[in-house]
Image (cartoon, rainbow, N blue to C red; front, side, top):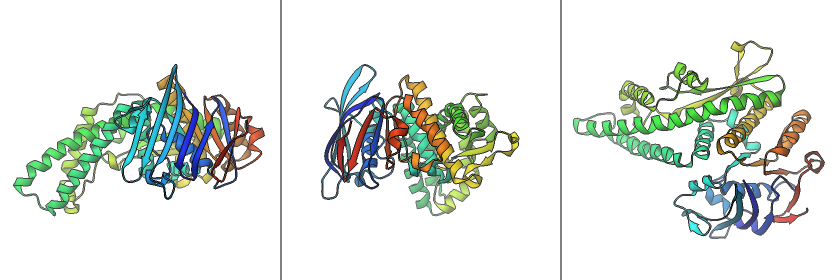
Length: 388
């Protein structure tokens, strides 16, 4: 898949710009704070998942009512046109071939992107929320219809938390039946979300291990699932491919844990268990070390190793999606090369030349010679120039 033509109006600092993109490697150059990342951000929005770094309201140029993104896209043998209107406080309206789509997440059936930028280091060293978001977005990219799973869980959590808060630590008989209804809903929706995440994580594991080994040379990477309600042995067996994911078993585990935490949840007035509190671990080790010496990358890895593991996760996402969709997603790399040492920069330069459409931004003039891009684009003070 690829974006052939892109037109932007009032998107960040891009007032009214157009650009043509090559099907292979595109290099976007310019000094810092000129609008290079904004260009990548607009392409990411075509996937229906919004901005990878900000709320939608921040995408609209100050003083404007809306930001517009128009794109001619090719997916397989289909030529499609996408229109986006991003309106602060009113959401985003999307059209495909001039026909409105019910939700922007449906755009994942047309455009799939993988974004990696300097802030993606938080995927390894940041809070669990970022890792959960990474998995949830991967689930939707693999199967767009599953976007409803997360939205349903969020709705149930809002309702259940409101009820728990209103009970103020007590559980009168007339409220017990209502709480039981929300318990069952939470178990059903929570099990569905956890099952989808575990499946995606299981399929990501071999790709991530392979990519980290390629980048780091002598390193090993392992991914794990952390949960207060999914038994560790069961999660490990799923990630190793030794057993299938069974949502009905997950429902039982969640129901049991909810019963155990009933009194504490009433006291705190909040839901204390479920996939909204789960996490993913990233563990690293040198190849020469024993298997038992895998260390948590968040706590013990250097910033260079954390960045390498985050890049491995993103390239693994690209590999998994390419296999699952039988088509390569669009790869968006934002100022990545300046953060890598020379050997890893050389490796990545070779790796991105043959992965379908790739758009790379760089403030370094030397990137032009290193990447040998098919298309060169200059961004200066919000103006996009087609250099060739």
